[in-house]
Image (cartoon, rainbow, N blue to C red; front, side, top):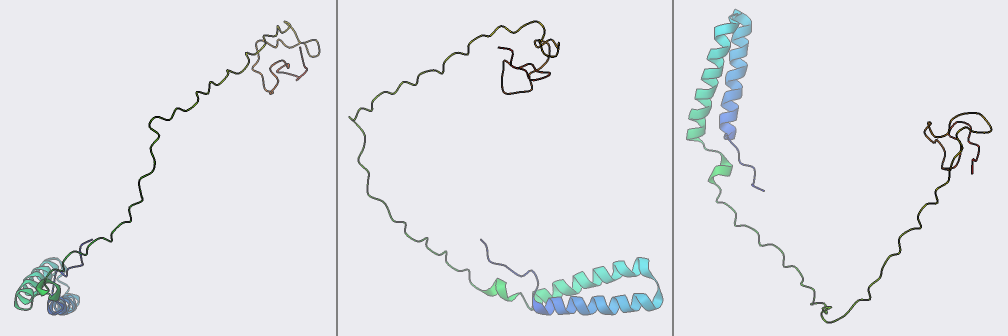
Length: 135
């Protein structure tokens, strides 16, 4: 992170502030806002640049600081390697296949066609309309 560096010296800031206060006071008294505000901006910039050239910012005169060395990190000792070591092979068994259940054409309880409606319960063998177990 770079250190903060002032753009203007405190003297230049004070001169610019004084010019703005005096210039705004004159503009309030005369009422000539349009050309007057541009004149105040220009005079403020010129006076700030001249003052900054005569009294440069303090931070600009300070020599740059040398970079701080980063703290040394501790190195952990090497871990033993697994070369030559054989891991047992574990084979996962697939889950059992679902058993196909033939649903009736019409629910005996409510008369709804269970195959045409989406199932709203956790039981795949239930009637999607009334919830009756059809298996």
